[in-house]
Image (cartoon, rainbow, N blue to C red; front, side, top):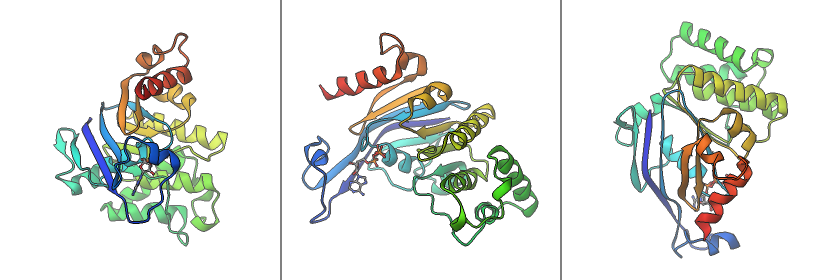
Length: 261
Ligand SMILES: Nc1ncnc2c1ncn2[C@@H]1O[C@H](COP(=O)(O)OP(=O)(O)OP(=O)(O)O)[C@@H](O)[C@H]1O
């Protein structure tokens, strides 16, 4: 289980750094800094899938990067199974599988080699990593391109390889930043089925998305981040009830409008 309390992160702006018109009008812009995340709190229990929603620039990626310890929060706590991961970064890296939005595979390495490289970094034995990679390549339908170099892969193949790499060490928590963005319908379904298999195995999964159908079919809980604040945090059923007829788009809009008043 992961418990996230009152996370905040501001970025100091460099001299001459250009902001968009929307960012200049944003309440998070202070002149010298931009407070991407102001107050984000939520829990994810074992076997739960959380969908992280929010408009562009809301602070989803910044939040997920803090969960993965790639970014240090200015304030807040993150407890994984009761342990403060901000104080134990080594434990965090061992326990969390993180897929970032820029996959960054080694182009010269094959799908197998990319995943195996990370498995070795995590200290897995050759026998264990071969068994795990075989299992993952079956779940993600990757056997057909296991020996293809990353530089020659389609974006769907790259994304599957990046997902396999993120979870090869069987982490206690999986965090995925927009795992289905840019994928075709078949590849998206494979990725969603894979997330479901993690849930069935009892692994908590937190993923950001702009696709409400994914939330509807997969998520137990929904968190909506708006202007750096977790404006909604509750069950999928409670989220549906925000609209008159259970429509998730309407529910989402009602949270955003409420917050912007
Ligand atoms: N290093 C940085 N310096 C300044 N501002 C930043 C930095 N990183 C992110 N931001 C700003 O913080 C805000 C939140 O960004 P973030 O990437 O977390 O949003 P997001 O919810 O993931 O958006 P999207 O849905 O578009 O991916 C944006 O306005 C972004 O420009």
